[in-house]
Image (cartoon, rainbow, N blue to C red):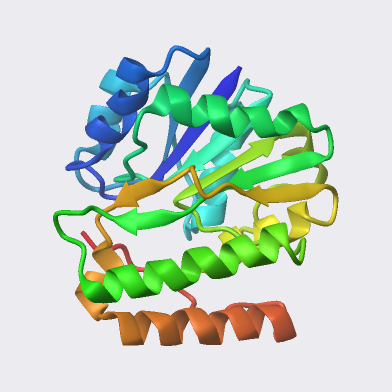
Length: 238
C-alpha cells in the first residue's frame, strides 16, 4: 500500500483539493494522511472531512521535519510519499505507477522529480529558477549519487525511512535535501524527469527569487559545514 503524507499549516484554501486529487483519481491502494502543525484556520476541520487520517501536532515548536515524521509514524504503507499542501500531481494513477515502478530495483530507496509553477502564473524567473533547480537535483541524484530533493514530492521505502530515522526535526529548512542525502547513503535515490508536479510558487512570488536563492544558499552551506541551518523559523506564506 501507498501512504501519502501531506504536512499542512494554515492550508484551508488548498487542503481539500490536495487530498481529493488522490481520493478521486488514484486506484492504487492508498491512504492520505494530513499532518497538521496546529493550524489556526479551518485546515484540520476540512482535512478530517476528506483525508483517511489527520494528525495534529501537540508540541511547542514545529518544523516541516516534525510534520512529515508525525505523518509517517501512523502510515501503514510499504511506500510513503511526502507531498506538500497545494501541490498538483497530473494524472495521479499514471504518476504513481511510474514512480513505484522504480522500486522494482531493490537498491532504490527514494524517488523524486521536477517541479514547476502553475502555467497560468509562471514567470520567466520561475522557469529559469525551477529549470536550474530541477537540473541540479537530477545531476546530484542520477550522476553523483548524492541524494537531493525538494519537499514538493518525495517517495521512499518505509524501511529505508525508518533506517535513517526519518527527517531531522531540528532543521527549519533544508530538511528535505538532508533527508535525501542520508537516504542515498543506504541505497539509491532517483530523479525521474517524468514525475513533474505543479504548485503556486507562493514563497518566490512573495519574497522574490533573489532573496529566496540567498536564503537557500546560506542554509545549504550552513547545514553542509556546521550541521545546522541558519534559519530558526520558516514562516508560512499564504
